[in-house]
Structure formats: structure tokens, C-alpha cells
Length: 313
Image (cartoon, rainbow, N blue to C red; front, side, top):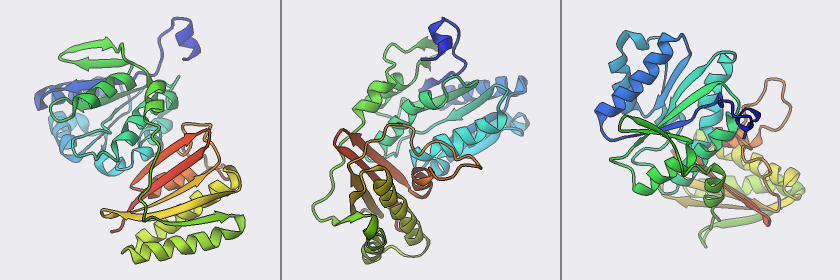
């Protein structure tokens, strides 16, 4: 809670969820939000999946020429990338004025493996933008999403809009959501496994490359995996007690690699802070998020597991 909130002053950051039930309601609410921002001379960005993006852009016509249009299905494929590379990337270049962003991170077609990362992202937005003069509107399709997903939207957004009404969410509990989705990450029994410490970092990277090649990964994606493994294992050595365990396996069309160590993440936004130009170090988890198609994290008193999913092709 901010100082302003403690003194009863309005919180400058506003994070409503829009629960929409048809395309007409979606376009009406989206274009109203965007048009109000354009009329006020505010910077506006719209980050939603491509098909929804075209609906809003077509409805806006020439009024949308100054809006930043982003295909969230690409930019936000890994939900862990959305805060640094979509939301903060836009808001940070427009400091000093009120900024409006539409961000739709949850859509029909998100897998059960991806969904926990989506919910954690929505909960973390509230920490990432506390005190900022920014409004981030998050649409949810009530026709296509399960009731549990809509319930989670109420828990991660302090304000909910639907059926022409706006109300405070009585279920708002982002910290509770983060705790509930801090799932233990189990690995398959056939996962290739190797322990590592500072002296074994090169061997761990060689091990991961060999195992990934054997499972059909090559080219640029193999280079991405090499960087991910280097960052994750180095993080374990520097911040996770000096050693850890590396595992790798294939899951569908993806290669999955994870590290497990004895450290504990004290900052829930680790890996989601944009790097400052003058920053030395501290970019490891951020780079992992940028290179991965999905990142899952579990951290508790016994240690931390970070898991990266990378498409083979």
C-alpha cells in the first residue's frame, strides 16, 4: 500500500479488469478507453492478441494513428516478459504524464502450463507500478475463459468493469494469488540431470547443449538455450549457495531446462525490472525471460527452482 493510499488519497496507478461478453462490448470499452486517452493527449498503447488488435484498430480509424499497437501473442508469449518489455518499455519513456495501456495477457488457447505464469504476472503488475501515474486495463473474455480464470481476474485487479458497471473488487488479494500459484515444479523421471558448482559451470553448459541436440534442437534456439543455461547456473552459484542441479528434458515441441539450488528469491519482481543503461550485472533472469518462451519459478525456504521452456524451432 502506498503512502497516498494510507492517507486516503487516490492511488495514481489504476489497474482495472474488463470482463467482456461479446465483441461489441469489447470494442466499445476498448475504443472508449483509447479515445479518452487520445483526446487528453496521453500516450496510449494497446497490447492484445493480433485478431483482437485489428478489431480495435479498425474501430479507431485515423484516431488511432498515434497509438502504439502491439501483438501480445508475440510480445507476451512468455508472461514474464510483459512487464519489462511491453508495459515498462512504454511507460518509462513517457514519465511525467499520465499513460494508458491495454494489456491482455490471458486468452483462450493459453495452456495449463502457461496459465500460472499469467496470473503471477497480473498480480505483480500491482507492485511494479505502485505509485506510477499509469492506467493498465486488462480485458478478459467471459465467453471463452473458465470461471476460475475470471475469479482470478477479480483477485488480481482492484477494480472490475463489466456490463457497463465499474466496481471495487471484494476479492482483490494479489499477495494471496502469488502464494497460491507458487507451485512446486515436479520434473519427469527421465530428465537428464547433472550437479554443478563454480568449477563445473562449463561442463554443465556442455551437458545441456549435448542433451538438447539429442532431442532435436539446433541453430539459433540452441544458442538461446546455451545463454539461458549459462545465466541460470551462474545465478545459482552466485546467489543460490554456490551449487545446484541442472535438469533438461523434451516436452512437446519444447526443450525444458531448469536449475534447482538452495537460494530464495527475496524480490518477487526479480527478472522483470528493466535494465538501466549504466547497470553492471543483475541482468541474468531478465535475459532468461527474454530468450524463453515461458519461465516458471518456485521458491520457498528450501530453495528455488527456475524452469525455462524454449521452442525447438
